[in-house]
Figure 1 (cartoon, rainbow, N blue to C red):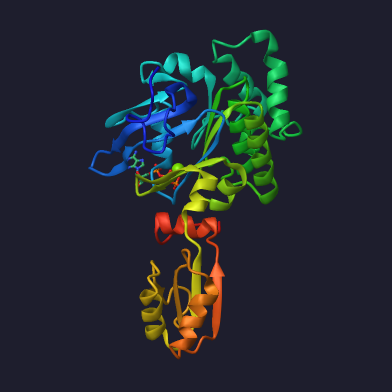
Figure 2 (spheres, helix red, strand yellow):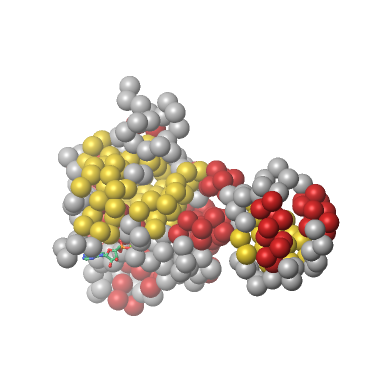
Length: 331
Ligand SMILES: Nc1ncnc2c1ncn2[C@@H]1O[C@H](COP(=O)(O)OP(=O)(O)OP(=O)(O)O)[C@@H](O)[C@H]1O
Ligand SMILES: [Mg+2]
């Protein structure tokens, strides 16, 4: 049995088997003409049954990665597996088991949402024709489009279009659902509904790979996350593990920043930083040192301590740290 330890990614747990993963990429790279590297040696391992958030700022390579996974664009380098089969050779057999929503799905503007789904379904040679109406009705119902089923696609709002694209991916049971920014253009209510839908689909046993540039969204629906930064993987793993990886910090507010900094360093604390949140602030990783002892040391050194805080990092801190400045975390 193939173990993935050495050849997939360092983040795969020891003893993990290839069949435990719905998506695996090895050194997946896309260089566009003109030389731009949109995706740079990406090693992803998406565990079966996970809701896997693919997070990154605009232009970090999420859509390009998804297009490669689905065989819509050829990688310049590297390889990948979907549902245990090597691609692109296995695309024909794997793709019917994969539902996808990628930027700009094409629907006929002059047909209704329902008629569009009917055409979409008819183009799939592997489904049972007799169940088409029931499946289409069910898919429309799941995305909340039943009332607008007869409306022309042309007259759909952006959110309705997005929902229809999700419905198209749900026309048959799927083992893997790949959604590129499924809540793009949705109002808060629609966003909540999509989140609920993703959880519901996951609870039925479908692995969901969902991209987003919004941290809050990923945080609320995902069990695992990969963070992209300029085409490269900054981190991946269970959400809880990423959270646990960031150290608790102690932050001191004082007019004597320079001397306080020296005291913290003298205590052997790591990650000493000044002026992170305010000019008169110095902070460090707390480590094993009790906060009260640090406070006492500062006071003994004659430093005026105006404020002292122990901060547990939010997931936002973790991601900003991973992706750098300019990451749209608030939405
Ligand atoms: N067909 C193309 N030709 C040349 N460059 C491209 C092409 N498609 C994408 N790129 C570039 O590759 C980079 C990654 O783009 P991509 O669309 O994958 O990012 P993204 O993470 O999906 O961004 P967003 O959050 O805005 O959707 C960008 O710099 C983009 O300009
Ligand atoms: Mg994109």
